[in-house]
Length: 184
Length: 303
Ligand SMILES: [Zn+2]
Image 1 (cartoon, rainbow over the protein chains, first blue to last red):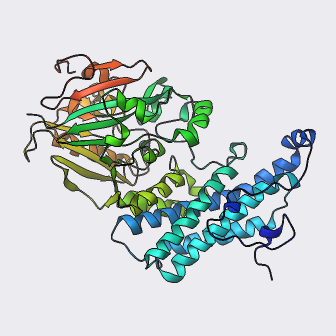
Image 2 (image 1 turned 90 degrees about the horizontal axis):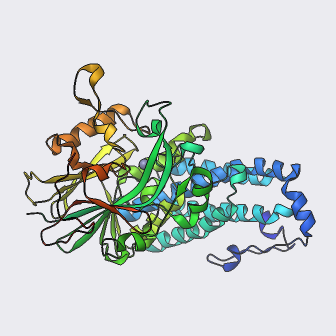
């Protein structure tokens, strides 16, 4: 059974990427479409529906990325060494499961396939990282290194999946102290 | 005797920032310029900074288009105004993890960073909460925290648990928990190096935005001045006021020794100049033997 349907959604064959594989950074485009079709799609209800539907998953992935990154800062930068029993780890696990569910339930128009694949790749990377924290408690340098690499692979993908049209941004500036309220 | 020179360096600005963001409760009182700055502390063979600005690569366009943040310049250009390079910076004190303070760590390859552990721990907690409580994540960027992992892994980030004295000679860190953010801290420079220094400077981060937070008009209650907290607190206004009192106590209630970095009127208190990139360089004090970087040799124009 393929537990990662997103991986082969584009090309009809199972491909599990190794950690750090360049393919994860450059998800290929699959559909050949005309410029007119792309333009029409930009204002379509279909895109709108996808954007609204995918946003909760984006938000969850961003939160999990932030939490796991914060945990790694504490592991490397403070005396804490084992986070596996921390309540936030449990919560991040729940959020990640929700994100996976959300992504699985999405209807994905062909023209946003690449976006969807990026989102799925982020979820996958974060799952690997969280599994390492949960199962092994981050005891060895190699565990830390592997978790860090998963997070570093996830971040640019999530950044690329950001889209301010649908309020999918890494930082919420709307109430930010020193930027913004003025014209928000 | 002064060990350190201190400069406040503008690196960007919002021309029209709503006053209610700066001073709690200042509704419908219009807008004012809000400079974005960081602080350089130089002396005793060290170059330290208080905060590092935001990541223009990721957010510049968005912040410019949507929120009117203008005139961003990279640390290389900004630091050059005081004769320094980003590589010269060996220490960075991060007052809090908001994007415009902790967002540009990559530009300082040789620096060791200090941040309160609580700032990170409570951020993790805030991110674990349901979406309806997302306000608690305001102005925090997961990417910044991930860059923090790089630093920590290289042994270049220390998570400080509370107060820390003599991080550099004569420089102390003080926590101000549950104020502007969960794990804010302020930086104190005892510029003659003594424990009972009479020459102290406090770099307040966002605990104070503006002189109005320190010296609000007290007429209505028949005192000269009153404290009014900044407009944004994830902790409480009470804690902000208590932190203000603590800072003021440290400088013996000489308010000019508390440096708010978003305050344009620093120029009325300290010597300053405008660079050819239209950024202000403000000279708070000069170490013995240091030459002025603002073209004025006196430091007497205090408010
Ligand atoms: Zn702030």
